[in-house]
Image 1: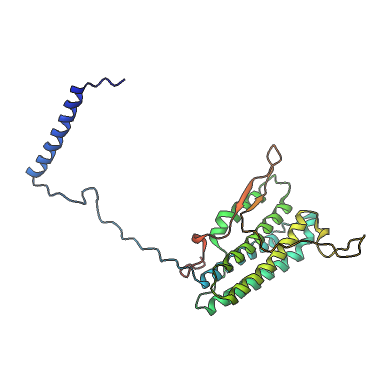
Image 2: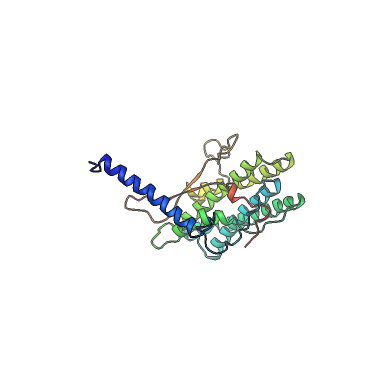
Length: 268
């Protein structure tokens, strides 16, 4: 319950008004000049404005190149650190081929960007690394993870899907029909990478490649492509399982506006 009476309230209010008037009067009498900068001290350091990011065809192509280098770096890490062991070591030749494919794709989209007046971008997308790949690698390589090889395959599978979705998403924004066709051709090649890796994750490496149905004598269907691929987030479960045998789950997304490789973005 409030114990302040109406008289007390009026008295407090009156003192407040009196105090404000007193201070104001003192200020005027002492010759103090009012200043709008009264709360600042010293000289503020001038700031440099961030360049305006304009989304052009060249920017989209440079961004696609950066995603290709994310994949290239990841595949090189797998090879250099011998991360595929046991049966998964059979994937080594496929990993080399996929890496080389991504290098070809990077060279292709960079050449297209240069033809439009842009600059080639020959390094990975730093934001994709910091948000997704680095946290995933930390989980994959942590001590006690019993599925390191399988988890690294799951990670590159996720990145292949991100690559496909990146190109597919850019198709709606690219202004040239020729560029849209180029983007979809690259997307289809990376979708085939994803299919191979999906078969490894679901059935083992023996299921990869053409197989024949013993009953019909016809080739088995490896995958049935839909009219359009998904543009949803990609979920990745990797790392040491918890007490319920569940692995940590990460959510991957294609580059957003603040992850595009604008004209003013260079390799660090």
